[in-house]
Length: 160
Image (cartoon, rainbow, N blue to C red; front, side):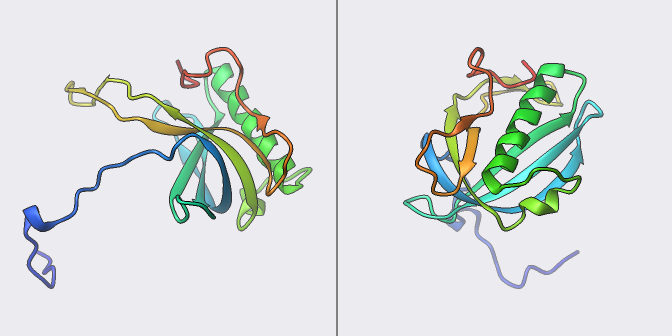
């Protein structure tokens, strides 16, 4: 048993409701990256970023790039996103995601509507809206963001 150091009253604790960032362009700092195994045995690069300015300053964004995936479309979307990040930060070649850490980028962020799903216990869940990153460009670049997703099926997840 662990002592909490104080008494917590459930009704007095804040709610932790997630609300996605509004769609738009955001200046971001790439904080860290990590390779993780996917539920299907693939590998994804998780890119964690902080919003640098504006009303959402300090909020977190995460991009998950399916670099090794049985679904070729999902893998190609991840490769395009990685290329977009590398171009934005001026990297020509690397085998280590650490080159992204501490780099600033500007990204186009969209909001994907909530989609119902069945959880691992077979219970229907309502789902919640979530942010998707549709492209990256150099930090502060006034030119258009390089779209890292295909134009068709833009509102679908890569694995759909």
